[in-house]
View 1 (cartoon, rainbow, N blue to C red):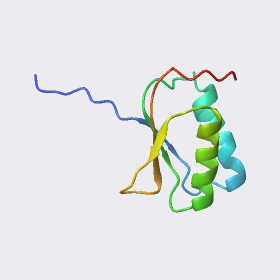
View 2 (cartoon, one colour):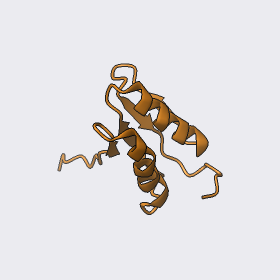
View 3 (cartoon, one colour):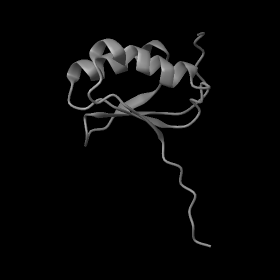
Length: 88
């Protein structure tokens, strides 16, 4: 069988979200949903610089490793891993 089992990264689409709601969505997605942060995920911010700043500030605060995709500035790729030592 040549079926490859590639699971798509979990994606949080913030496109069109009001800025005041962004932090809540990030907290729900990363801190409370079973805290399944061991696999890679994607945050879609769209073209909003403010949205990207809010997301990156959040990721920095909780020691997530991430890269803003150079080919698409509206996507942040968040690395998986359970080596963060933050306390929620």
